[in-house]
Structure formats: structure tokens, C-alpha cells
Amino acid sequence: MARVSGSIVGTLLGVSRFGIERRIRGFFSSCYFGGTKLKIDRHLQIEGHNALQLGDKVTLFGGSHFVAHKSNPITVGSGTHIGRNSVFSGLGGIKIGANCAISSDVNVYSITQDIVSDPKGLINDNGVIKQQVIIGDDVWIGAGAVILPGVTVGDHAVIGAGSVVNKDIDPWMIVVGVPAKPIRDRRDKQDVSKQ
Image (tube, rainbow, N blue to C red; front, side, top):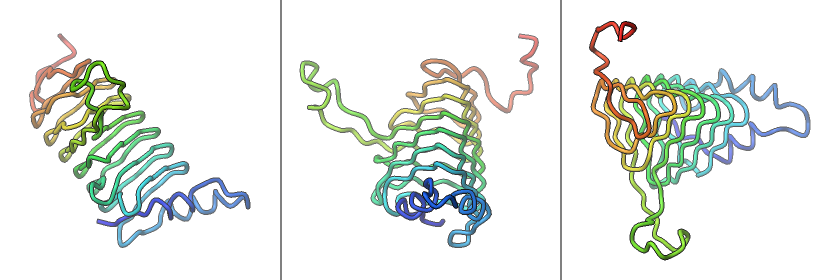
């Protein structure tokens, strides 16, 4: 895994006042970072020095925002691609497996605030809760899905577009809805078009 520094990527991929952003983006779209063929689009935001660890052949499309800390990094497995305008709030740690297909506008949060301990207090006065999110290998996540802190998504699972995942998902399950509920096993060959 290669470590990507937010300061380096942010500096090189930002809009250049010298008009060379296109050249830099073209260079980095096929560039190797520490032996990892990383494909990145413009306007990618990474906050946290050495907080993003990437496997081979990872693709990060533009507009996505990664927030992490070196003590709780965001790791992305080989062959995974992440669509445009996705948010990964990873201060509690996020692990994404290999060969995942993550669509646009997906939000993954590993940090939240405790609003239960003192219901009369202001939200800003409550404690912060950090819970790692784990996404297995070969997971497909539809556009606009939200994954909340502490969730583990099993290998080969599928999360439908717009779903809100607040509980663990078993391997091979297809889940949809708010909150997300399983509708069937991905290995099931039944003809869903007749239902």
C-alpha cells in the first residue's frame, strides 16, 4: 500500500494560477505512487498527512473528500474505484477492501456525536464517538448511499442507491432502503424481473 500525503496531492491537483492544472492532472492520471498505479481526477480533497493508504490500480474520481488521521487511516484495497463527489469522514478509521465499486455521492462516516447521553445539552457539548467502518472485498455501493459509524459490510454485498446503512451487512447480501434491509442473497439466481 502506498501512503498519499494530503498536502502533496492537494497542492498538485488544485487549480493552478499558472494554467497548468490540465498538464498536472494528465501526468498524475497515469502516474505511479510508490509502485501503485493510482488514477486520480481533479478536485480530489485529502485532509490528513499520510492518512490515505491505497492498493494497486485504485481509481479516485474528482470531487471526493477524504478526512482521516494517521492513527486511524482510510485504507483502500487494490482494484477499487470511488465515484465522484463522495465523502469519507474517517477519523474513526475506514477500511475498504479490494475490487469494490463505489458509486458517486456515497457518504461513509466513522465519527459521530453522542446525542443520547445528555438530551438537554447542545449537540456541540456532547462527546465524539469514533467507530471504524469496514467494507469487505467486491462490495458494490450505489449512488447516494450512506454508511454510518461502526458498520461492517461483508464481502460481495450490494448496497442499493440511496440506502442508509446503520447495521452490519452479511456477506453476499443485497440491501436497500432507509434504513437498509436485506432483500436477497446475491448468489440467488432467481429472476427478479418477474417479481
